[in-house]
Length: 373
Image (spheres, helix red, strand yellow):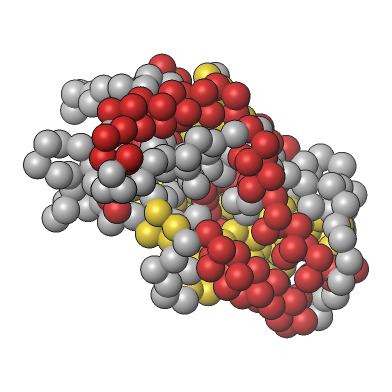
């Protein structure tokens, strides 16, 4: 069977950022406005008063301190509280494809590759801008890549599912070089009027180049094994779709945006993912102590801490399980790839690590890698 490597990764980071202080100030202004407008109904017990948020609450609940966003002004506008990203004409590149292309070019430059050498492009992300033409085909066209392209969505696990799909294409001889892109405008599906989730997401795009080891340059990452798992759950959900897009007034209903039962998710996903990691390690004849680092999905600092502890049998150091949540927040499928991209340069040949994602579905993916010579 053809050996497969991760040759390079790429990252596009939006220049605008929103701090917790800025986000909480906007949310609390909305709460004050809502409670004042509904004061009579609240006093009569007909409506519940909204509770304000705080920076301490956000950081304790998530470990998030800031996030990069594609549009700051719209999110911090109390009258809007969502990104204001005007629809582009069909003659222009879509915003999701533009982000993906930027990340892809970063990966290609790192690998010393030309886009014409790419055999396939997969766009794997949580929320696609449109149904068709596929964003991946648009990215393929913008790059000047060859072969075929398609979109796939497995929520926060999309990147690892995309990596296994790309690796399978290479192993089967259908492609030698496959580019997986993960553009995420997560702020567009976030309810910024919900105290329990208004702080969770940020925007970003990542890219991963998967190649046959026969053509991959030195210094990449051998893929030792991949595993995917899904288990249906309603505890993380987004009901937006072409059959049920908006309310009559054009505003998205709350259930058409991101919703989750956070405590249930924590309770159910932590054992699911940690058991999956340990089982996959055993299948590969590896033990936790053989891992130099785990690049976990960047959803919640407490969740990552608990998963790492269950895998290692002890508290993990920041070196063993690095986080980018403080700067990027939750970026869905891109989170574990950002962590890998930013925290892998100190590996020596032969040292092993794990890229792991998990999220809605439930879904989870593990990709064990070893630094190639």
